[in-house]
Image (cartoon, rainbow, N blue to C red; front, top):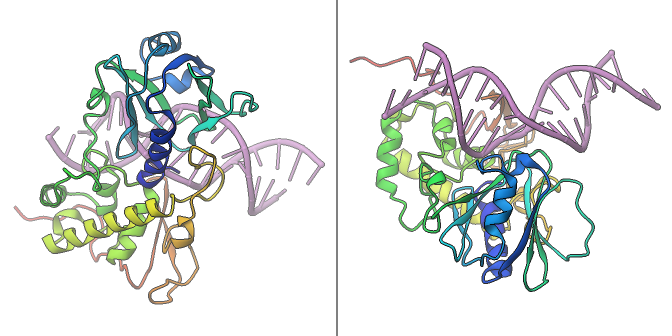
Length: 289
DNA sequence: CCTCATTCCTGCGGGC
DNA sequence: TGCCCGCAGGAATGAG
């Protein structure tokens, strides 16, 4: 389940192994993998042949590869997407969706995606920042991310704080796992209402988000199975450091109370019933003039 | 503008 | 043994 740390790990690997290389040919093996490339798979392959990769960039969970044409390849790994560097003679993966071959006959870049939530497209003139992801907020590791603006925007919202953390137009890069981890560290229940958070509480939460993302990058990301791997197919080990996510019934590492699991947006939230008490008023239906 | 439910997809594992 | 169903979940989309 790639979130910012996993995508950043992939970005670093891609940056090392494909920057400066020229694409010879592209093979689209599943149309859904390029569904957001409106002109279609054949066009996707045509427009990339002969182009040189200049850089590998990331915002939140999105990656993009500026090209010497001024365009960029935009990618999102979705739930199960992998970008792998593989020797040309390595057998095709079961869920291989797109293959990039390079002029130098070195390792291929393969987009492998079991559940096909991930997607690649070409952004015209998108080298600086693809227009397709202009609506995505800066992530908290971006040097130009403004803590004060985020806190102000968060407190203007009137929704549950976990929903806000998952809203990529407010702050990007945070998914279900790291939202739960940051909320556990901050001692806040995810159904706390944003406009009732004090400024200092919001700043503390943001600091925990930033810390947990940074620590996870150092660990090479989180993986529960083989679905998230870096470009060499290796799993990260941050899952050993998780305090809340996936720990239902296990003792809270801070107070010992059993971690609880609650339904949330058709998925699960994990929290400590003692460190993260539910707010007295749940829901958003309170406010006088 | 803002918030929220729905939809896409497939392998795995639990239950019967 | 084998089938079915729920679950995992990011983000676009449209409704209200």
